[in-house]
Length: 192
Image (cartoon, rainbow, N blue to C red):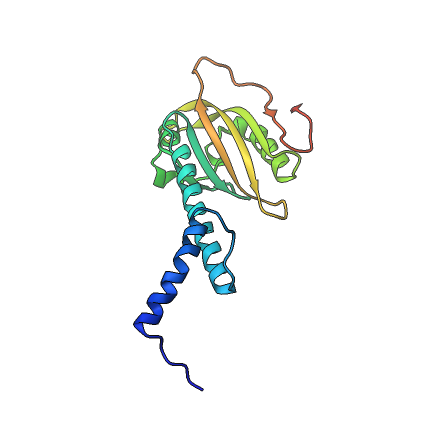
């Protein structure tokens, strides 16, 4: 038994019958249309639109000129995304920073404190951290920065990347002996 192709008039009639349903979906008057293929298509389209909107919002915030922003993978903490302000603070181009790691820019005397904070994040003792530390710029000069970072975890709780805001601090400010780790989960505020 073979199916014949619908005529132009039949297609036009189907489209006319579907218009009220499409309008109802657009105005959120109904949640679904009967038929698995139609539901899947409509849901995927809506998810895609939300993802595009979310990414555009994140990109706009990330590129704010007033504060350095970075994203790095885990566990190596290699930069995967940086904004222009962070490039200015570090003295590197974005392309150069994408070949470097978060710890690699840290002054050698501050690395252990920095790694201790990151270890707490990896061990799920906290989801965020804050540290004042020295960074070594491309030209070898040292800049004091404040880092406020957060971990992004997968559904299993594993850290997949970190996001951090970096602000440069006045040059006459002293480097602290200990870092402050802020907890957004599980642990109370502690000093190291």
